[in-house]
Length: 138
Image (cartoon, rainbow, N blue to C red; front, side, top):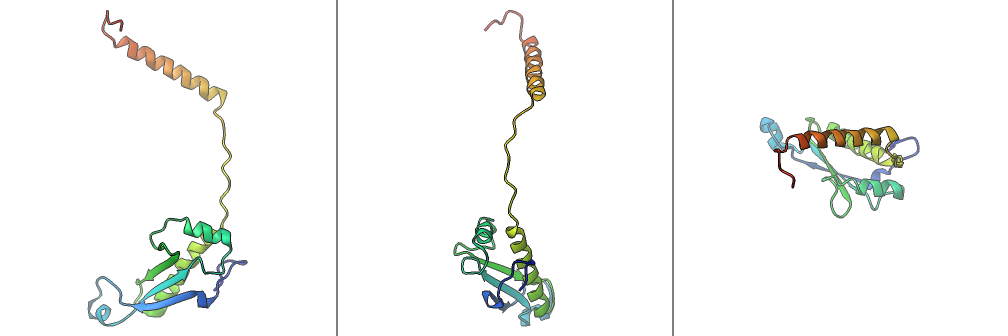
């Protein structure tokens, strides 16, 4: 399965199971296994280590403690369309994890912002001091 122009995963790394869909749907939903459950073992996959680490660090509730990603697709009535939807969700998740985040460069406050902050503090302090009762010199 092709994820990006440089990134792809083998079909044997993805495991599909047909399960019953949840929710309303009448008799049809009670007798057919039309929902698709996709299982993808992140740690055993052929993805680059960097991408695996970002996927595991997502903290997504669909990723188990063993590093297995489970996606359940049940929006469509047919199993094939649900399989396609699950694959698209997997591809979107891997695409997002394959992008290297830009490093944060720390900045310093400008001289103007420091000056404004100190002026505000002085003004606010005067306002509070004016509220004190006369003769209260604690």
